[in-house]
Image (cartoon, rainbow, N blue to C red; front, side, top):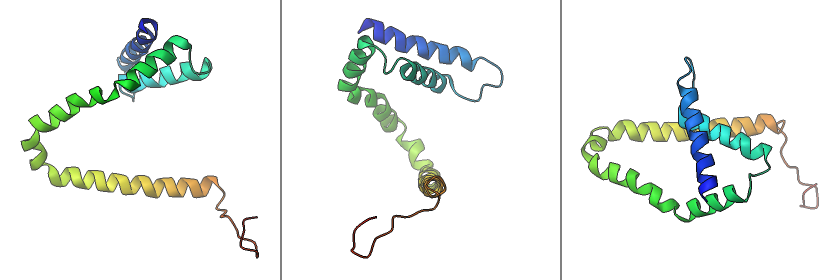
Length: 123
């Protein structure tokens, strides 16, 4: 467990170090996740230590939401002041994501749709 957690933290720190590079477009946490993902791809999912650490972290995943919940409770007044902007950003962002995803899927699939044969089944 300690080896896997150390490895995760090392990738986090590597991402934070990359964040110091001038012109780096990604936050350090994202860079660290990308590096860790690439490591997992290259090592075919990491070793047993990484898998054990992941299982342990996933078992305790709900605990990671406590700080976010506390932030929402303590910042209720600000959230109420900004409710319209938050609502619009979430709604428009979701709609834009749906539209772009549908467009991308259509482009990647070549615009083909499944055709039914005369018997009512699929080709």
